[in-house]
Image 1: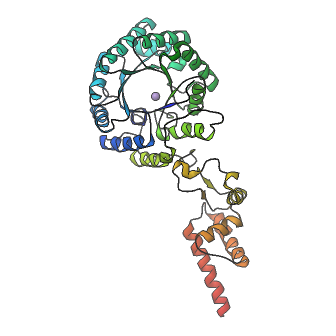
Image 2: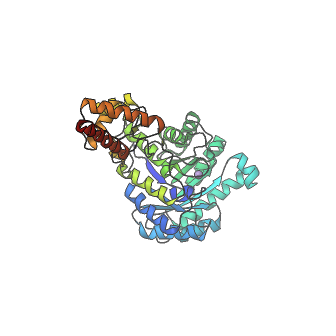
Image 3: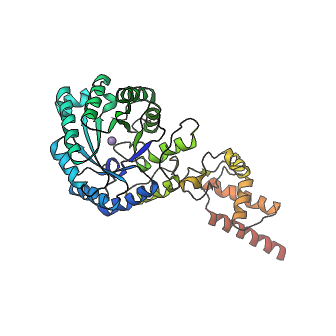
Length: 390
Ligand code: MN
């Protein structure tokens, strides 16, 4: 089986529609430029029926980034599909992404439609979308909670109507890797080579990345994800994490993506500067502490050989270098190394004095800045000079 996994970025759509993440059209274009550099295969630029801003964003991104596949979202109804098609008019590689919920819970309480009606709506939307573009994706919203037999039926019907990609989202982040992998395996088996099976996982139980990987192992070949994992509620599958698992553990996950990982940190930083929040410091891959070491034993090992405590070269994801954070858990070795980096070669006695003062300071304060270390050394040097003079 083909080992290429398509990265479908939905930072500008699912991500953008979550609290605190609204972006203006110019901001979306700025981010889209970085996403194109990063090498995403498909960029979902918006939901054109939802607002004029979304329509404009899809239109503008379609004009500007003609080498990327640009997707626009549409519910499975005429108005939405036509609006998405209009927004994509200028795209060289347009994709209409149409969806309808398929789980009984959504059918009963939200859509108030029968399974047969939903199936017909899905087929009609895909058929209509195919009149505008060749590349149509269908999503069975709440797919992970949909009856598998019905999901197979819908999947076959939309492919027969012309969909090239069938996405099975875990819309509410409820599935587990084994369960989701099994479901995806069933759909892959039913569709064979007739369509690409895609996954779209939410992180309500912290399983979005694990579920996406389980799905890929079961035969899915497109992952929908977002930068920094932003998105509805607890967010989507994090792009940087899922890509780096496949890269770092290629021995277990023998897949390739088109992502140029060295841009990951810059895209993450840009997104944080546009929306109202950044990532938590301990976020994998792009968090401030992702490559920081403070514990003495760790710092000592790291200084002797990086691979003792570092599984990814920070530069490979665009982070300038691993960071040793000097704090109360740091040892002499790390302090000596930092002093040398700062231009101070200390004798054993000097280091002892600096170290004693440093630990006193570190007891009161979390994380000691380089400037504070410089001040400390200078003060100690001055005292020593005064003692000699006296
Ligand atoms: Mn979603």
